[in-house]
Length: 490
Image (cartoon, rainbow, N blue to C red):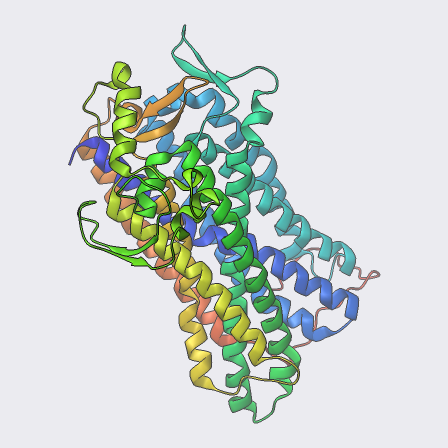
């Protein structure tokens, strides 16, 4: 393989690895803050122990997320230096804010939360975890704004003298941050994060309900600790599922406007026309393959246009979109460029992501129904089923990012005709990095990330199996304590 293909593989591998930790940190930070706030308001020490249990998982996940995210920025300067030269003035701005503002907000208050228990007042200690949660969301917004710039560059203009994309005046940075693409992407990603975290919390709590009943021959632990936690997780899943589905609907319609080739590929539109039926399964080796459609007239058109029939429901096929783009950009890149993304990756990634979103909705309703009123899960088989459901939102989130990035190809910066800012992927790769160097670094990072992934799973499994020590003494705040040094108590 050439350096371009290897560089794409390396960035794809490291990004997918890193994104396994990101949504869990974002969602779980807020859920842990909610649990701690419930304990503060109610004065119930059981909430404090539930907070400690899920807080350990949060700390493990955050640490591994930082470790796997460090190399992301380095790749822009090493494998993708031409891309960085072209868009660095604009693309680097939100990343700089993320590092200097959001990440320091996260790390500072997470440190105070970890070491300040029993030394900071309960209200201040609870405030630190909320500020950490806010930091994770702000960090996500800046990073997603940078990625959204790659999807559709706004707030920038092309400088003909330098051949670089630059911020468009004093308000350019604000347009880059708060455009439609950034806002919809943030809403969809944050909803996904709460679905990931809610599933983990609900699954472990439901599993521990049955386990604690069997181990203690009593329902006290199940009702006092795990059932309240399961409710927090299940409600998070329910609300997040609606958020994922609704934001995904509007995001899909926006993609139709800014990235028509991606939209046609992910929806499997192989024939231009009105009132399209939803394609469930198709032979993705080519658009001429067999298709299995859901026999509801105009459903796919409605998903993309809000119209079931009529001229407004018209969808343009992937081949026709490609022909239009070839004609539009013939003077820039020639007449023979193929602007179609990988059909199989786009089509199936979209359906896996969408299917898992609806699965989350079904599971949340199932969980809330199971633990309604005085209900309690006593079935270890059901508990194991829920444990097997934990990876599902992670898989959905990963395929969402695969669709986002692979569906954009062959662009590294999708074109914005009004600003003239656009860049093909093969123009963004570093010209002085040979294939062997990229392959060697990719091999090293893949092995390293695999090892970190094993450690991540092992640590979460270990602390999940430990459960809650109901007899452990709660760390209490003593305002008159002579020793005011901070210590790690989790």
